[in-house]
Amino acid sequence: MSEHFIILIPTIPTFVPADGLLEKAKYLLAQFLPGAEEIEAVIADEVKFVDQGENFERVCCPGCSSELQTAWWQQAMDKAYETKFRNLNLVTPCCGLTTSLNDLDYRRPAGFARCRLSARGPKQNEIPLEQLYQLEQILGTKLRQIWVHY
Image (cartoon, rainbow, N blue to C red; front, side, top):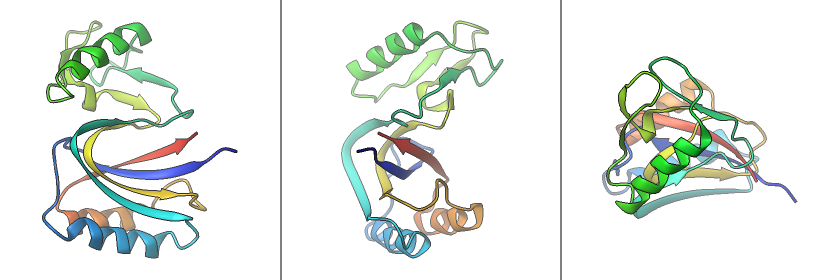
């Protein structure tokens, strides 16, 4: 049986909102997605990679838009994993851009975060920008939407 999720993560991987704000945002997300089977708010001890599951298409350079080889990306992920994703910095092989794993152009968004909001089984595959903005205002940070399919 396949499952779908909308996951919202801060655009800054180490960001954690002030006490109580993630729960407040969780409550509002539940209002925005009344058909979702479960809404969850999680704060992890360490930064984790939040992937898009089977929705993965490719990873591109944010500087020149070249598609990055999967083997190169996996090596960069392995290197970052050695630091428990505390160091996401890299230089792209295509144009030499200094950037981070978090800022690569994931075709179907993905990213790194310590905290996340997730909705399992939503009836839609994204949150409208106006609602996303309201959640960002509560949390005090920009958010990235990740549409996940397993």
